[in-house]
Length: 309
Image 1 (cartoon, helix red, strand yellow):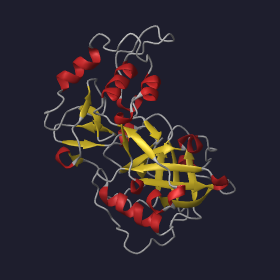
Image 2 (image 1 turned 90 degrees about the horizontal axis):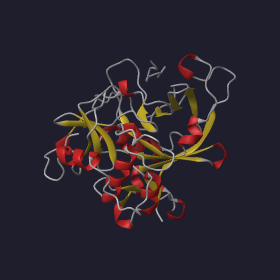
Image 3 (image 1 turned 30 degrees about the vertical axis):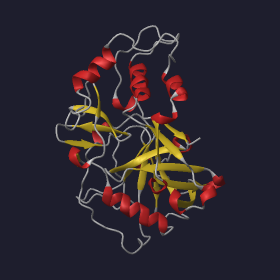
Image 4 (image 1 turned 90 degrees about the vertical axis):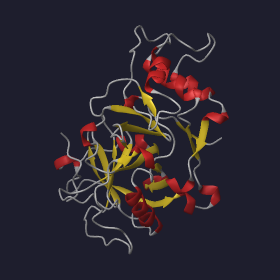
């Protein structure tokens, strides 16, 4: 039984944005104009077109479930190339069609795939993928934009090419934040194939970082997964007689007819809008807040994503 997971800031070369510069940006007195938006959501709503970057259609996985509702996942091929290659091949083969969401563990994960673990994989799917949960900074696109706040699970945290990352001096890895998508695996050293996937639906289980492959994030429909009935079996698996949510189809957006393709944009993490957004995530100044926190952790500063206008 695939039951994992168990429940229980450094710029690469520092040529553009140093940690000291970023700390000053965050911790200095308010730099926004008096009439500027005072909340993170207002920053996002008023961000100019130049602050957004398109998400490629072949990086969008569209899962349609019972009732025609959909869950859209942005894939992260630069962080999990072997797994994303498998996931794309599985989607093109229609492997998930007719399968289900078969595990929902409260404050933890929703998991989907073949509940029987007996369905044959399509030809060409790489099995026994060597665990590769950490990527050299030199292989990733774009400079790191660090967060200048301590993290309990990594020496540094920040953002690279639109993704939240945890980092040391030479490497980066994706964190188990809310809505991140990972690959279920067994106790064996291999890292799973990508046929069985889960989405985080609770408080970020960061202890799983660098222990399980993360392949992307849910950018539409996480509320659907998070609101499903919890399984009564061990680790949230649905017991006999409990109804699993049927999956109608899973396709890459690039393989859908043009009129049916979802189109999304992620905020450019190097933009001024993103810097303002992060500053206000750490220091709320609207009428509700009596005392700004003076900090924000990685999982509480999700990179904004929107449907393309």
